[in-house]
Length: 152
Image (cartoon, rainbow, N blue to C red; front, top):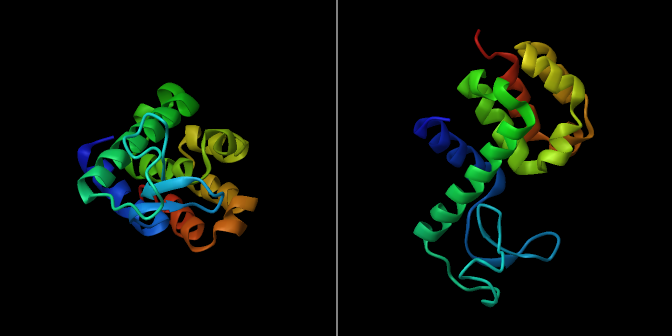
């Protein structure tokens, strides 16, 4: 993914996930900050109290690391085909993976088959035919609408 693609994904995820410049508890009660960055033992923020301020630079660094992981997970899921997908499709898939993780994205069998075949309309139709689509709402609709018109 190009630097411009990474920047576009960052802007999309800031909208979709939100950006919080302090430590907070996520919906599962885990310490988190930034663009949904789960604090790990290896993070300098580990064991800092809820409400601790986090600099925008640290938020960006943590996001870059998380984005690297999401891209790597997409590379694992799609294999060599990943490198031939249009950047727009890569951005959509990284956004989806960031939201649900590879185990859940892997279950989108028909959508993933259509992705690998370059059939964006079928892929968007299959993405819409999912619990994820019904649960996520506007974000999912926007992503599938983008996918549907790739290359048009």
